Image 1 (tube, rainbow, N blue to C red):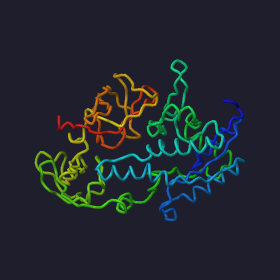
Image 2: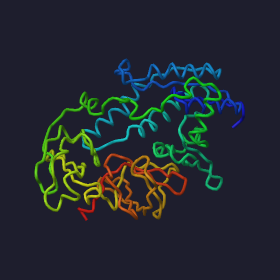
Image 3: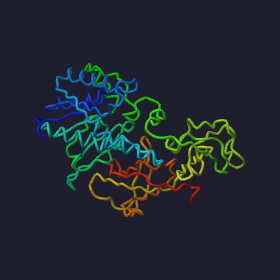
Length: 379
């Protein structure tokens, strides 16, 4: 790529994308900023920071001397990300909309828009890296060099066409370096707090948000002995491994299930959609929360082809240490391609709807959506 190439940067208003734009400009590229508006249902509320973020992004563009365009992808987002998010929750699963947003909006709608502007590449502030493998001729998605900020998990659905057009400059840096650089440059958002949570929910209470879109059907909360110990507000509002907000903190377990005494916390262990029953257990290490294996479908591989069966590592949730596992390629009951992962150590609260992402060292191979995860109690 020539030094005079045009690169369109997704400026979010945060420090990572700001430093991304600076680094690319320093390398000699013609840099154009785009601010993506992906949600507008309540962008005037206290929880939606879209307007503030655009002001910050525009201030950064002004300091760096680059153009910025405000682009509205809200219709695409609602159709291709949010509707899928609701479908999954209504089915009792726990989806990861940020993964879908990357695949469908940031590296599809945004990429297409950038290409129409004459860009040769796009760039974002993700902590990941892209490398062209000289032997295979394929682009590889690599972990970011800062292990505490690596975001390859969220990017595992990117394909060869997307990876070939994408730059992740801050993936080569640690977060502390990015902050230091922003301060030295006098960027207006150098000390801005990192955003957390799902983009369209922001900092608002999650259950309050879901209440607006999903109907509630209360039902019993039961312990492993079958005893009803409370009432849930609707199965869609709970996820496996959840500890807070169950409303049963003072309930004591019976007999052998006591597992550490009356003050041992309760965790969501199973959701029976058919009987509208929430099953809970006491103790973090309860067998109902431990899975030796999982099955996943809706597979997506960065290389465009399925990796051979063998020994790899996987994450079943973000910010989890790589877990050694064996991959088996299987066919799911619906005739879809699937994968089975068998772990060296039991995995905690493996959750249908979340993504299982496969790694070969620092290379992110891709992954799939968790379909089932038998627990020790089922073995």
